[in-house]
Length: 520
Image (cartoon, rainbow, N blue to C red):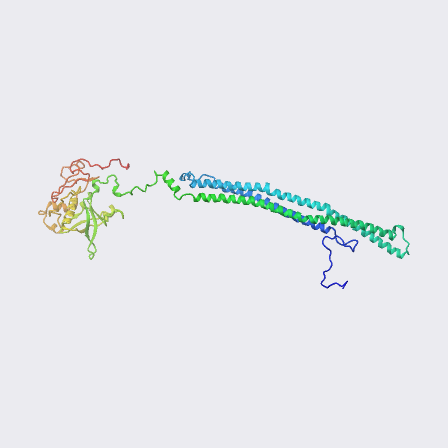
C-alpha cells in the first residue's frame, strides 16, 4: 500500500558528500567537514612520507657509521704480522691470507660509504619530491574547497539573519493590523530571503563541485603516493641489498682464501728457509759409542780387573750377595750394584783403598779383604770401622786372578792393566791371623810387609803413586820417580804405568791433555 513503510526499511540518511538538505534553507551540517577530512588524510600521507624519509636518512647514517667501524676493524690487521719472517711472503699462505683480509675489509668499508652516497642521491630525492607534492595538494585543497566552504558558511549566516528578520516582521504585521514600514514589508523581506537563498545555494553548489573534484582526484593521487613509496623502497633494496651481497662476497673470498692454503704450505717454506737450523730427520741419532772426549782412554781410567763377585752378607742366614767389583789403577776396590752407567749415577757402594787393607789368602774360590770403607769421604772414612769382607769368585782360577791383582795393588806395584797370562799367587800371600803367632825370627819378611799397612805416602801426583820413603835407604824425598816394586808373588806378571810408559824411568808423568785446563 502506498504510504505504508515496511518495518525493515532502512532509515533515511544523508548521502556522503551532500552539503545541504532540500528541506532546509540552512542545513545544520558543516560544509567544512569534508574538506577537513581530506586535509587530515593529506596530513597522514605527508607524515608517512616523512617517516620513510627519516628511515632512509638514519640508514645512511648507519652506513656511514659502519664504514667507520670497519675502518676500526681494519686497524686490527693493518700492522705487519709479528714474527712475519716465519711466514712465506708469497700468495697462497698466511701472509697472503692477511693481505686478502685487509683488502676485503677495506672493500666492505668502501661499500658502506658507497651505499650511503647512493641512498642520499637516489632514494631520498624520490621521497622529498613526493613530500613536496603532498604539500602542494594540501595547498590546493586549502585555497579551493576549504575557501569555498567558508563562503558557504558566510552565505548561510546571511540567509539565516534575513529569515529571522522576516519572522519578526510577520509577527509585527499581525499585531499592528497590517501597518508596517515600507522597508520592513514582509513581502520585501521574503524576496530578500529568496535572493540570499539563491546566492547561498550557488555557493553551496560551487563548493560541492570543488569538493567532488578534489575527492575524485584523491584516488589517483593516493595511487601515485603508494607507487612512489614502492619506487623508493625498491631503490633502497637494490642499494642496501647490493651492498650486503658485495659484503657477503668479500667475506666469502676471505674464507675461500683461507681454505685454499695447503696444510703443509707454510711448514715446507719454513723448513726450506731454516734448513741450516732445523734438525735433519735423515741424520742418525747420536750414540755414546761414537762420542769421544779428552782423557777418554787415559790409563788411570781403565780397570785392572772388573767383574761380578759374590760377597758374604752380614746377615747370617742370607748367604752371599752378588755385586759388580772393580780394581782401579788408583788401588781402590769399588763395589757397584751393576756395570750399568745409564740408569743411575755409578757411585760406589763400597770403596776400599787396598794399600791400607789386609789381604787374606785364597782358599778355593774364596778370599778375604779387611779394611775401612772410604766411600763416605774423609770424615766418614775417619770414623769408619774395619770390616773383613769375604768374597767368592765364580771359579778358583777367577779367585786367583782377583787375588793377584788385589795383592799387587795392596803392595804398591799395581800401576797398569793386567796382560794375558796372569798367574795366581804362589802361596806366599799375607799371613793369616793364625800365622801371626809364630816367632818373629821365623816369620817371612814379605808376609810381614803384606800384613802391615802401606808406608806413609809423601806425594800424590796425577797418574801415579810416589814411592814410600824408607829411613836409611838413602833416597832424598821428592827426588825419585815412580818406583817399580816387584812382588815375590807376582810370578812374572808385567804391570804398565797409568800413562802407558814403563815404571822406574824417572820421568815426570804428564796429564795426557792436549790443551790447557778450562779450554775443553
